[in-house]
Length: 382
Ligand SMILES: *Cc1c(COP(=O)(O)O)cnc(C)c1O
Image (cartoon, rainbow, N blue to C red; front, side, top):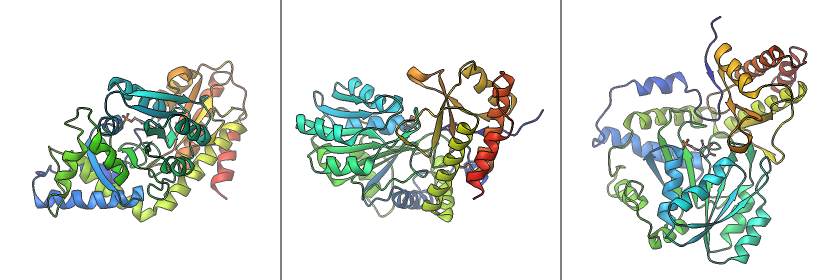
């Protein structure tokens, strides 16, 4: 049988056709008014999407490169930072800090839960030496959202800088950088922003720049200061080394698409897809993994008893064309995840639910075909 390929992981995600075709255009030289105009417009568009008036830089890197840039530019060896983690990606902040000789006060909640802002408040007042708080908007490994607005309120009253990994959240769920007082926000290309992997974007507040001025960790490729100098030295944006020309041209198109839909409409579309996916999984008797606030970017589901999770995932991918994600870290084989973010719509969710029903039934799991689909339709069609 032939099945259309659908990439329903929480990154990378499917790329819209007009964004793909931008990537097929001739490469233009980056030291030209033509490219620098595109870059200038992309930076302005990203600021509207981040909802920020702060400086914004783009690095040719995976999202993790943007995360590493935050540690390298904000910290000095021996500094103490607070990491508030609710999963695998939250833990990455501590791993990066450790690699740079920065000590992390590691606060990790039970996976499935959201970070508790009160605990951040408690740890900040217990240790006034904490220079920065690192956390995650949408924890992709568990399908959980944390309350950045409240965390921002707390951190802004202290000298510490708030750094948010919004890699899988931006474009999909609300992120109000300035209103929520998020000093540094890190985003990756291949999730809600609907372009192929390879770009990291970082917004930087005045408070974060002040800390960056004192920071002594070594950096070159990821130097915010060098990048910002190139960005602002002349009327049109520039970069200290060769940027990802094609990806930036693709990003210009995806920003156009996102703004044509409207950012708020995109958030609503994601909320609807997520509600439908959750209702469908519960309707066929599966249990959702998240116990905290659900992230509308990704739905995480326990693999039911008697079902082989990795076989389920492989059947759906190799037989039915839909790539879901397994679990990560300590829940690697006990959960699976449905990514419904970026270039995804109602029909993708219905297709994924139907494929999951079919693959579950093939493993002898008892269900009535269409029950999950009906539950999803009920959410999507009303
Ligand atoms: C995907 C993701 C990352 C890592 O992004 P890479 O581009 O793979 O480096 C980090 N944090 C979150 C929340 C993510 O979803």
